Image (cartoon, rainbow, N blue to C red; front, side, top):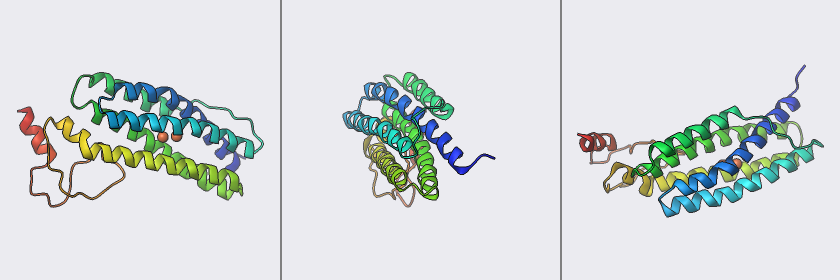
Length: 198
Ligand SMILES: [Fe+2]
Ligand SMILES: [Fe+2]
């Protein structure tokens, strides 16, 4: 019968493959970004992602296992979509919003995966692995929040092709595609986009 440990090691191999693919993809995303702050944020997360590969190797080691990857089809698909959207929106004012949305999809996948891995490492009684996975999870969450801030502070408005008074908005974990909510006395971004496209 397959055990929780087998499930854990299988998912660990999945993320080991995912992180190595992300290390290769992030420099391309940074090069495609036209917003300096976004470029910097992507390159900073590249450094962290290289660290994730090393931390995962330590997690394997803590289980006396050799690090090995198993093709992560989800990441292959997410990165392929990222490539496609970056190519589609090259030269458009929406390029940075497009890149942020692609990057946030990857971050959310990572957050879901590391949330599970961290819990499972705890259940398996491996404190060292649980601590390493928690560190990675926190960095993924922070990267996602940085992307949310960049989307809200500039990239979404830039994509709209005009400057919008953003007012005060509640924070949420992802905004690449979020529209402003609440009681803003201005038209929604959707209305504005429609007006612009007419
Ligand atoms: Fe990562
Ligand atoms: Fe990440």
